[in-house]
Image 1 (cartoon, helix red, strand yellow):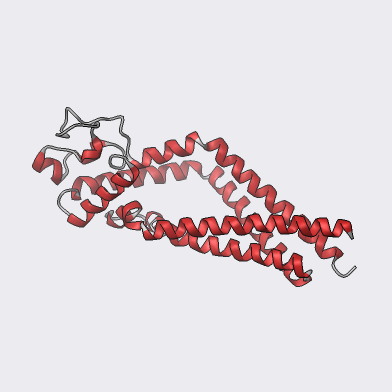
Image 2 (image 1 turned 180 degrees about the vertical axis):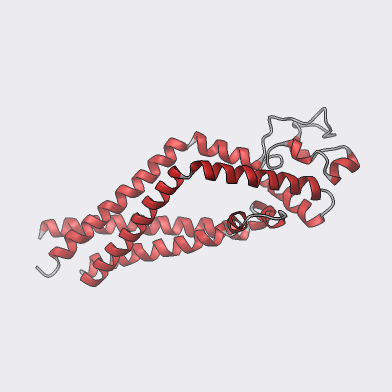
Length: 242
C-alpha cells in the first residue's frame, strides 16, 4: 500500500511537470502570436519564400497547440493517478509513447539531414536579404515590420547592415537604419555603420550555439522524464485493482 502511494505521488509529480510545461508553451505561443508583427511579420513579406519559411510565421499557433496538448496530457495523467483509472493510465502511456517516438525520429532526422537544413537556411538568408534590398524604404508596411523587428530584438537586418546596401532607403538618403550604428550616432551612414551589430538570424544562431549544452541537457531531461512517466504509469496500471 505504501509502495502504491509512492507510485501515485511520483505519477502526480511527473504529470504536474508536463502540465506546467504545456502552460509555459501556451503562454509563449500566445505572446508570439500577439506580437507576431514585430517578431515574425517580416516572413510574410519575402518574395518567392519556400513553404517551410512561410510555415515558420505560424510558429506561435504551433506552440499554442503543443502547449494545450501537453497540458491535457498532464491533466489526463494526474486524473488517472488520483482516480486509479486503468483506461486513463493506458491512454496516457500510449500518448507519451507516441510523443517520445516522434521526438526520437525528429532528432535522427535533424542529425542525418543537417547539411540539408544548413543549405535551406542559407537559401532563406539570401531571399530575406534580397527582399530587404528590394523593398526597404519603398514598401511602407515592409519597412515598418522590419523596423519593429529590429527594435524588439536590438539587431540590424537579417545578417548585418550590408543587407540595406542598394535598398531604396539607402539609395535615397545614403543612410542605414538607426539600429545598424553605434550608440549616440546622429547620422547612420557608411562611416558610422557598425558591423559588430549582427542581424537577427546571426544573433539567433549565436544564442543557440552558446546554449547548445543547455538545450541538449533540457532535451535529455525531457526524454528521461517521459520514460519515467511511462514506467510509473505502467506500474500503477498493473497495481490498480490489486
